[in-house]
Structure formats: C-alpha cells, structure tokens
Image (cartoon, rainbow, N blue to C red; front, top):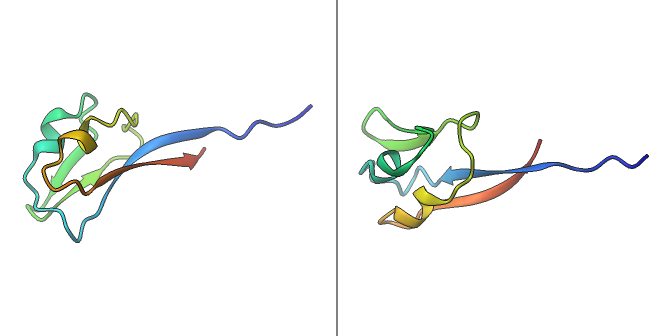
Length: 70
C-alpha cells in the first residue's frame, strides 16, 4: 500500500513589503487574514483555503500561494 503525499495551498504574505492596506483581509472568504498592529497582514494557516483571492487583489502583488505538505 503506497502512502500518498497530501498538499494544501496557503497564502503567504511578504511582511517586509506589506503596506497593511487591508484589501486582502476584505476579500478573504474565510476571514483568514488580519492586519497585525497596523504593520502587515498575517495569514491564519488553519483557516486559509488557498483560494487565491487575496493574491489576485493585493495592490502590491506581494501575496503568493504556496503548496505545503500536510
């Protein structure tokens, strides 16, 4: 019996370039993104479904969707 590797897509924010505009937070259907102390956006990985909406709407194009092992 072979074991299948399962992956999940997650949003990743480059916090050094984030302007904390909140656009990603507004478009996230799972409310998985919050602006931390007005400095940068942070993704709650347990809630993120990797739908790419935040990455598409980010005005600075600093959100990437990555596959991670589960």
